[in-house]
Image (cartoon, rainbow, N blue to C red; front, side, top):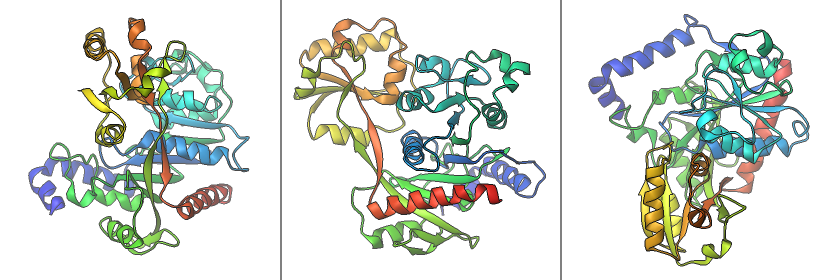
Length: 385
């Protein structure tokens, strides 16, 4: 029903997407592979599926393996809403304004991994494989930091719609709270691409699930994705094109509060009964539900996704903090990257500012083991193809 509504009401948008994919699928538009293995982490919905924590989970999986622990890994992102242009390497001392909040978050979590941003993923991958090309390139001359090793593997953050680059492995994330068969294309819904594109995924991860799901619940959910014969013991089903695809289920696990400004943070505030929450993410409902079990949320500020914090926002948050002098002030790790770009955060507020890290975990140990073996096994096939 949702597909029919999209075809009728959003016919121009639906047709544009359809024709674009037809041209790529039939070779009228060229799609190029990278010379090193690439893992695309993407979605079909606009925001909110958890690409960044899943990218971090994939990096952890690779770094824990014997195959990739000592290799040069890289992450390439577009760098949403960044001020810089062209190809840029993300540094530990970088700013969210310059390179984007999510790439900066990944870099700080994985200092040994090369993290870069480039609107053109094709050129970005080429620079990551051949850093020396930056010297002779007009685009490369704009790069502020060209010192990084040639990459052996590249994780592509949010590149499923970037058809010019053909990834070696495509991992598509789907939000458990927003089944694709009940959603619509933008602007009626949150779909940025056609649901049928899910058939091109090598792996699908259903994110933000309840902590526990029965096998029959998983099998029923997978059916909504157009996948049949799903075997929960192997996490494998068959899509409508007859291709076998792995489907996994993950949930969010919140970590202990950490000070945004470690040199100023006073951890005594974390024992408060009251909390002030501010976020600039796609959806803060799961976070609010988690925090409300431990704290009374006395004030909440809900900004747009990737919101750039300004002095006026700091004054509003500071005013709420003054009204609630014992409350801890909490936000997300992604928001914290943008908040640190604000030069005039009062010291009294810095003491009370905390971020809540998150990790994604598979619902069962068996799923994690199958995901790990499937990912590493597929990567071993790269040189033979």
